[in-house]
Image (cartoon, rainbow, N blue to C red; front, side):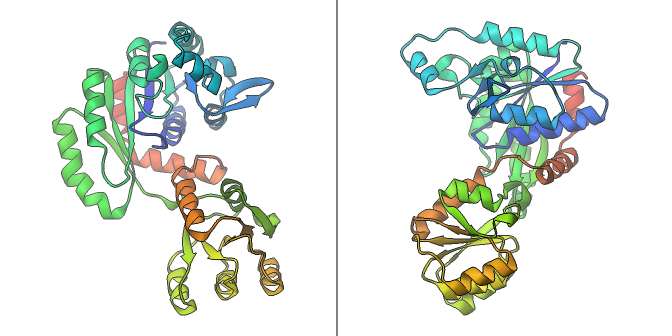
Length: 354
């Protein structure tokens, strides 16, 4: 096996797991025997008595691959690992990674190799994406998730670093308002400068959604009602700091919207509950009154109680939604559809020679 595709990003939380899973599922459907590894893991968990990378374990599960965790992720980054590297006591882990790559790839048509963070992550221990691509002889697919703008400087830098080993780029999470500029300005610019754009994935609220139970954990709060409905979906949020009439107008426009409101605003809390919001977040550690609790129980609306003020909770919520990972069946199905429709698989297979 001498075919490998590195899936990296211009920044953390760019959608690498989503793309790796989606590409793997599509190529498996086309009959290819796919292997997978994530050489450097940064989210350690215990699996079957061994330390594994949480994201890697999940992608393996999605692709229905049974591979030893110590081969899939030979290097797990912990605080102790970093301290050794900063002290100059770090070994060169590349031979171990190469050996694992070759073992996992034996008999496979293609190996998917996932990056961690961005392509420079791991530079401090000589395990950055650029080095891995070069040393393992991989082609690279780089994901750029839109924030305010396309990260064109980073894409151009990666192109200069990798040259012909850069297969192309995928622009991810593109809102409708940016679609014309992406198509008419950024894609022509990148392609004129040697960066092939092999897919544009539109923004999909479901992929950035979160369950109320996960939301409670992420906010450091606790569910006080409707614990059996923790499987609902929150796609965005609304801060309830306005008059009831204005709040109702905003709330009706946005489906699957969690409402963040002060624990003393029972008027807005009741409107949100009667509107069947997927989750009500009460700030200031003020427990809801009996009327609110009763209606939430009847209508099965989860209420999360948090200690912080509304502004702090809103900032946390924004961060949580931007960092949501692929973790459930609904998202996996949607991921497979988005990737299959958006990426140019004919060009990808031609570039890989598979």
